[in-house]
Length: 202
Picture 1 (cartoon, rainbow, N blue to C red):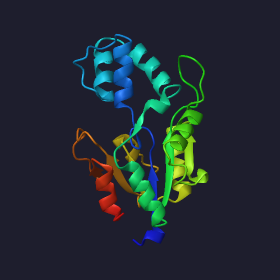
Picture 2 (cartoon, rainbow, N blue to C red; picture 1 turned 30 degrees about the horizontal axis):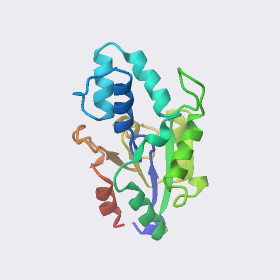
Picture 3 (cartoon, one colour; picture 1 turned 180 degrees about the vertical axis):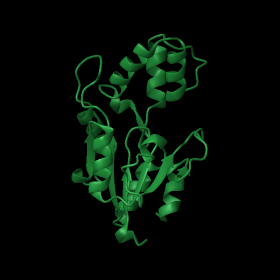
């Protein structure tokens, strides 16, 4: 497929932005985990759930995705990939599902927080504002992928990529940096943005 025909859709949370250090730092500061818990989001979540602290995990998400959003870092190589796509005029859209307001905790516009993160980290210079979409529901995200005409979509959630209403022609790419999910039928699995760049020769 020629570059002019490609349209790459990319998820936001846990695909472009990595929250591992923020969740670990916050959980340690609040005394919710011992320092022996590995510094990654999944380990923090699993520890709290095993301890019967699902409520604290939900509250932490509201904080991290809102007022502490700017502490999160881009995954290594993702900004370089977006820059390379812009240099080749390869179409890229950011299409994400996150609620606008936290379920618990202090009021905050989580869509605005995500957009500020993109601005602060240089992504808005590489992707037009019209190609950045934060949707309230998974169904809206599925619909936007189709409306945008994406030929490929990168996401960290295999269950989203398995959505039956996505186009059967959509190339589905699972971002699994921890290599923890194993093979998934119908999905191309990548563990780094360098690997994604190799796929698209950028």
